[in-house]
Amino acid sequence: MRFAFIRAHRDRWPIANLCRVLQVSTRGYRAWVSRPMCERQRTDLKVLAHIREHYALSNRTYGRPRMTMELKEAGLGVGERVSIRRGPRA
Figure 1 (tube, rainbow, N blue to C red):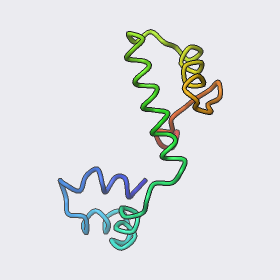
Figure 2: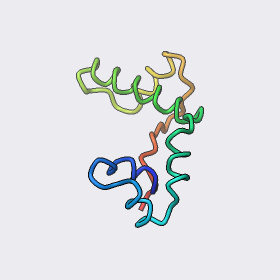
Figure 3: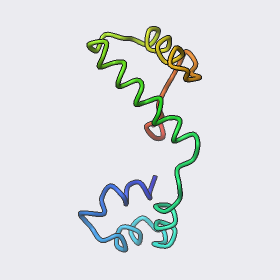
Figure 4: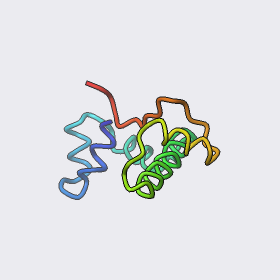
């Protein structure tokens, strides 16, 4: 979460300052940036792209049941309650 914040705000403040304030090392941040995406993240991005495409093609009318059916027909292994993680819940 801290590294994502640094990435989002690196144009506004120097990375070294952000790392110091958030109490993380600059080496740790740079290692995080260069690390490849895990399989779960790639799958989530693929599912999200399909959701956005099918939602737009349906004139923004598809709800969860029809969207789940479309995703299963597209060969994606999704359950009834598909959720794309947006970060920790409060």
